Image (cartoon, rainbow, N blue to C red; front, side, top):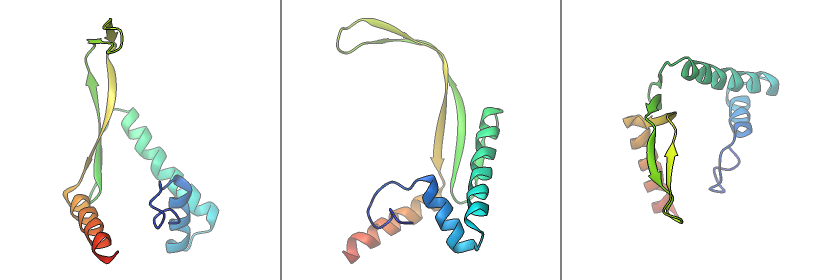
Length: 109
């Protein structure tokens, strides 16, 4: 992925490029594959299902109750409405791998 060396942000197009290079799909097939996976995750979450990708992470929608908060600038009490929030929990394998890769890149530089 082009941004990996730059320390930048990996975007969807970078994922498409990676699938294109590693799997041998055409660019359009790689784009479609990435879109299908991301859309299935969105649809599952919107339907109230958790998504767990073994060896990577889990995604979970959870409901938060309405609550009162305080505007730090004015001190005014503000109502924060009830909402759903998406949580991301990395797998143990992902944590180990990323920590190892970060450690190796610091030692090689």
